Every structure is written in C-alpha cells, then in structure tokens.
Image 1: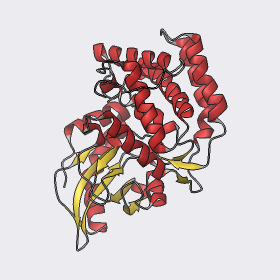
Image 2 (image 1 turned 45 degrees about the vertical axis):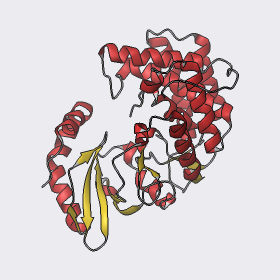
Image 3 (image 1 turned 90 degrees about the vertical axis):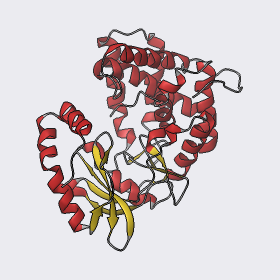
Image 4 (image 1 turned 45 degrees about the horizontal axis):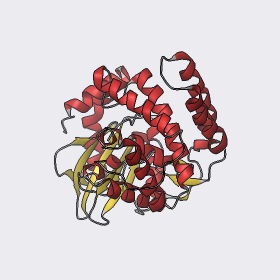
Length: 326
C-alpha cells in the first residue's frame, strides 16, 4: 500500500476536518483497488497537489501514466469532463476515469512547472497559448460561471461592509460592475477555471500541458485573472510593479487572442476577491502572520492599480507566484 505524504494528510485534515481524516484512512486501500482495476503498478514516489495524491504508475504493456485520486468535493467533479472534451489538446490525456471515487488515470508529464521559468514573458505567452487551445465549445452538463455571478456580487458587497480593509468604494464598485456587465452573459466556452503557472507542466508529447482544471464554461478572459494573482510573489519583487503587472496582461491577452481590456477587468475582479478572501480565510501559502499581511496588502494594491487607466505601453523590467485559493 502507498504511504500518504504527511504534509498532504495534515493539510487535508486542517481543511476538511473529520471527513478528511476518514477519507485519508481508506485512501491506501482505495489506491490499491484502482491500481488492480486499471492494470497498473506503482512506478515512483507518491506526490500530491492541494486536494489529491498523484501516484506514478506503469500500465502493464501500455507505458507510463499517473493515478490521481482527489478528496470528494464539488470543485473536483468536472475535472475529467474537461480532460475528455480536450482530448489531449493543450492538456494531459485522460486514459481512465472513476467518477464515484474521484479517480483518474492520466498521461504522465514532468514535475517541472511553468512557475519555475524566470522569463515572465515566456510564462505569460505559454499560459496564453494554452488558454487559447483550451477554449473549445463546452460540453453539456458543465457548471457555467455565469451561474455564479449573483453570488459573486453578493459576496463582494458583504465583504466590503463586514471586513476591515483599505479598498476605496470605487474599486469595489468596479469589480461589481465587471460581474454585472461580463459575469451574467459569458460565452458557452470550456475554460480551465484555475489557469496559473503551477498548473502548466513540461511534457513529452508537447512542450507544455495543463493539469488540474475546474472544468467550467465561461469567458476565457477570466483565466487571465487567475494567472495574474498567482504571480503575486514574483510581481512583488519587480522593479516597477505597475509595468510588470500590465506586461503580464499585455502578453497573455495577445497570446490568448483575447480583448486586453476584458482581461484587465477580470483581473481586477480577481484581485478584489483575493483581497477579501485573504482577510477571511488566508491563502494557501500564508494562513496568518506577516506573510499573509504582505500578500493581502499586495492584493489591495493590485485591485487599485487595475482600477486605473492602463498606462502607456512599454517594456516592463524586473523578475516576474501567490494569491490562489481553493
């Protein structure tokens, strides 16, 4: 049986409580059953993401793959649907699926992620090109981001009133306007839903492939915001933060063939969301303390910066990850 990584076990119990502990207790047996069912043998150390374990395997007579088993959660339901719709176009191939047990057998890729690339333009370009390739007609049955618009607006208003924060009313109002104007009438397009540099990995079949999609239908420009907020740690170190932020949006929008203004509006919405989320819940990489304060302060700064008119176009200096939350 596999050994569940201690860090993964600890974070799962912290996040999910008793249900998480119960799931962890039966996870090794579950993995064994899936390996037997799909004719695989372990082929490397067990890895993990935020919500699931990844077991490198060798398929009897059919090469290598990875077994991914996720904690049962509504946010994980449509991941295999997205992979099936893409069929390997810009994302890893889905070999097998067991929806009842939140398990998939997937194409194996390298452990190196796009977040390890130091060239910020390359990061934004690769992410933009992946976004463009993933933007295909959404299959029926997927959740629509447009269905969340009402809840987004309600939460933004509640956070603005209930939390202590420095965001001007005009900055919050701009995020609300984005929800009202762009949120309710989004295209019926399959998007990743959590596209950032750590969810794009080096591969053999193609240079880069996406993993860990949410599997939802909506505006591809929405993913520009998820990319930007996940670059927070790097952007904090830029010599000119304003130029660096706008450079990410410029390059991503061009590579993804998206309207630049629309990408900025979604990015501003994501920044306001992140500023409030951090105050209520903390972030995955910082739950409390000075690091959380620094990241929350950066989210505030980003929300204000993206509410302002875009500066004259020019090159951005400095190194170009973050504010992602589940």
